[in-house]
Amino acid sequence: MSKYVCPTCGYVYDPEVGDPDNGIAPGTKFEDIPDDWVCPVCGVPKSEFTEG
Image (cartoon, rainbow, N blue to C red; front, side):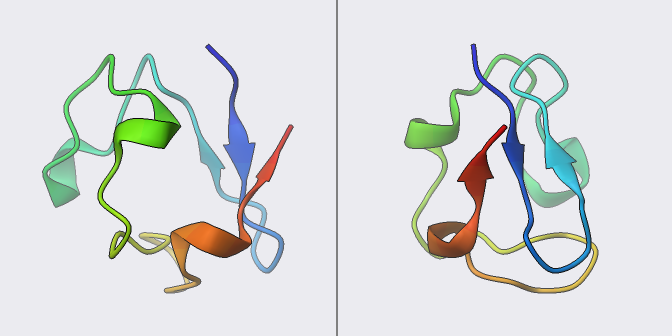
């Protein structure tokens, strides 16, 4: 599974880790995250993340 990077702060979404503090379980593919999810560090929308 690919990791995705926030272009503003550099936060890396790792599907193996997820974002459990914001309701995204480990093992959740980036494509399966709800469209209204935002970067947990700086609030950038999911749509602005890049594959990295």
